[in-house]
Image 1 (cartoon, helix red, strand yellow):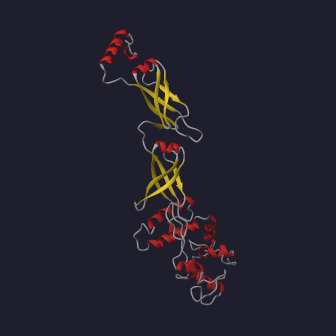
Image 2 (spheres, helix red, strand yellow):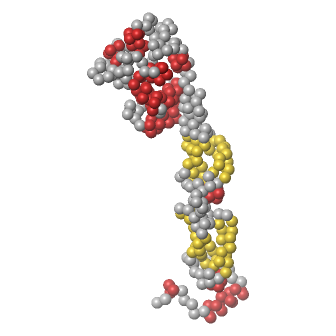
Image 3 (tube, rainbow, N blue to C red):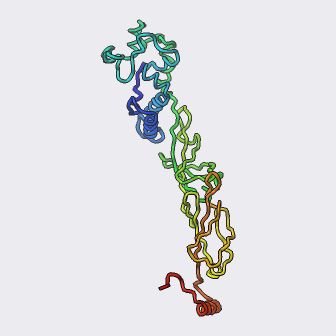
Length: 333
């Protein structure tokens, strides 16, 4: 029974946390993925990495593996091995406190198969003939046969990509079709997805089963990180939107209505008489969705004057300039 040090396969310490194991697996799975790697042994490495991850990511399997080493599956399926074996541990080659080195105990070329032969007196050893394992089943079938044929099922790994949404699409959500560039190969593919209403820049959308394809196992997931494109009219701060409302000088002076653009279309707003540039109008609940409603829309008024006057307009402005005693506050002495 061949012993594979799964910790060495993933390049992590035996005390590695679940997050460390997960990160190591993702890195190696990308490195040796047969669709990406050009190495001759990439597929075998990929399968071995997947096999190690399947064991070490599961706390129960990991505990069995740490205690029984290569025999962990037999212990899991048929119960703990007979007395005298349970003290042996994998990885460091120790047999409990005060025990000698495992390889020295059974010879430099020895393995668990030799150990079983000595412990149970089986003729021919586990590597010869069709001797039965003390834990049930033939050693020439089951796991060893699957391994010799290279049929270790591995799940696909998760992938990440970025999508760029307009402010309107992010605010309203709904079904969208996006083009995704594969991070490993650079190839593109189109995907339909449901964009959540009010999604923010930096948030991720999960597409189940759209990640890397597995080898006999379930595919991974695709995580799309959201970017929101700059908008020509709006600036987003939290859930509030900020924009500019241009008004004519007579509207600002006399008061009236102006047309304001929102994410849901144009609306008419009141401009109070005597309004100067810089004054803000607030529209409650007309900002960006925040899960419980929406933020507010703030429109900063900017007074625009005509650049090209008709003769009549010029005459009227000249009359106003003569008749008015108004002086802007910044020009007071």
